Image (cartoon, rainbow, N blue to C red; front, side, top):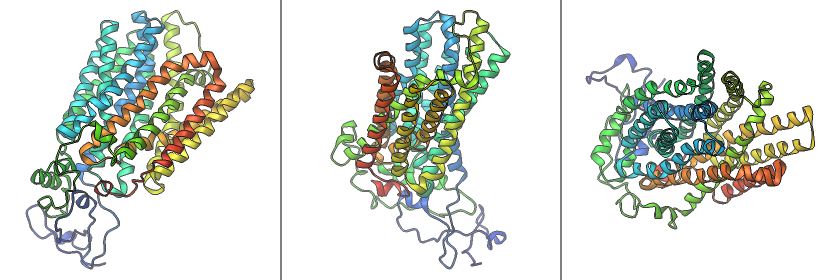
Length: 511
């Protein structure tokens, strides 16, 4: 084994106990960029690099706290679905009020992704990362204690604002602190906690309904997340600011201090950080002028904006559209339920059936996101997104064939189609659109760009929620699914035509 250059412990003494096993980085740092320091791997004394860059405790902390936010998103969104029949009974909600409850958090996400997520470009990634979770916690308490319908809707909208802010912010705090060669895995790994949160929400909802079969059970479902949310909010106070963001603002000294804390490890490497006096800054980082939303449509950035926004919009049309048919699938999967529940016991029983069925569907989503995590940095974002869109189209087409059959064949085709769709959407467009949106924009507008893409996508979700019942009644299931087949194919075409492959590239090269 080659002998690495000397290392020291925290007090500066030579650490002979690790000389034969712990490599360190060469001391010739020059004026490297932020991402070059993050990507740097230890080098043995003969010049041989190690296989990978070990993650630091701070990098793991940042990732886990971002993943926790995604977990809460999946948990709360699912909880709303389980809680809806109970709170509708408690507040005597009609069909229109049902729609308002379902749309409140969705509208909040649409507005929050742009209005709050974009503020991370102005005030920093860390402040917004903390504020969004504080807002989430406050409105979560509000939902739990809601005395009437207007208060409930307002608090659900507030939850949506916080979740919308998290779309760009959580992505940025991860992607701007991780090595380039594994950035996709970590971003999608955190994103996958949405599905884990949804699965956990199914378990929590079922358990609470089992232990407390009453109308007030929905309040305990939301309340179960309050204490964990408070703990995550406090823990986010301890992370570092993005050195990329600081450097883009010309705050080099602070960026260097942040980098030393971010890359603190034993043995320490790099031993010092020298970002120079701006020699590595390009014209995208020299000022904060022209960093408004109109820059997203400038000649330099327009292609990235289209790639990040339009496929995500088309993906949400299909994803939220399939949600319309979920109750039918769940009823077929877990058995018959009482269609006209009047007694509270019947209502609770129906809710428990839906919770168990949703858990089965969520497992398929988890398999899809696991595949995305494993393949994103190997196969590439664009290829997976195109392949995923095509797979979604195939799944939807299979489901459309079910209208020609009855009995078991109808059930098999629906299950086959929707299982293919669920897996392929998380392998491809559902995961990759989120990943790409946080990578293709310059640092100074990355928050705005990712936030705009998320908001534009949620316009598709809102349109779907509004138009699907109308179209379902006017044109029927088959032609409605045909429309979604076409939108999936369009998603693949737009992705390929506007492609910007970000796999393995560091964020500065992308700028």
